[in-house]
Length: 326
Image (cartoon, rainbow, N blue to C red; front, side, top):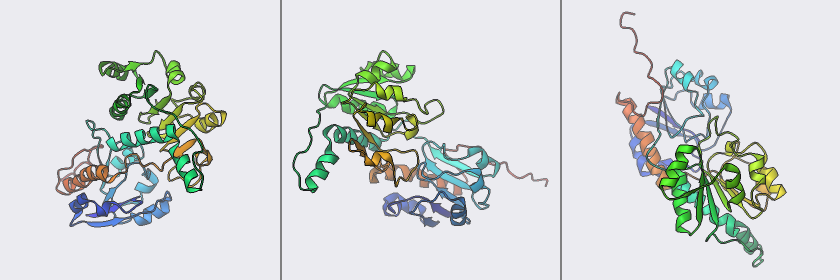
């Protein structure tokens, strides 16, 4: 099959062991990013199987309608960036392993790295020392501080365990069934959302971005946080109301933030990048060689299964077989 991979920024996939699963296919890898439909239509004109790296490129009807050879989109995890109805109408099968039983440990680890970096002001200290200065600020310890986990799913549960290991008081806020799971795991549950934001020294967000969660963290929530508190977001930027985080940080509540996700990506210019009280990383939560070996082994398996006539992890119904009487 003619396979195209988009948005492999560091040209990593060709260096992974799992890439051998594409032996025998005609593979093209694009390492730059484009949102331009004309550019994408040219790049994908002959593509039969398209590999997406999470949500880096949106695949909507205006593009799909210009890809007559496309038969399969193979990726991993959720798919809000794909027009599933258009794929079905045009006979394009979407396969995506939702890995419902496996958290992204890489994302959980980055979350914890950002907690430590934000509380100890590590990027600021490194920059200061490289500029020829010695100690310029004093950070905060984690021991006995209150860690707020907003969203107690697979990743939130792992991060809660990290907090417990560091001697933090872990408190959870989430929908009711998730709060009950947190109680069963021995964690405190906040009495309400307002108390959660007001009491926690660190708040980390761990929810999927869907209609119900878009803007779920409001300007009032942020304004109620302590001036010494840290907000960490490795989930999705849209969980926070538009422009609310920048405004809140300028007003000093919360005092700090550590962010891995943005409204539009890749980011070349953003107000958060200019703020001394913010640690920014370029959406690398799930980006490790180890994580990608796992993820793309699945993605490439889906291509081979499709070619063998036994597709798996199917998102949309396959196109109907032609009527033999025609």
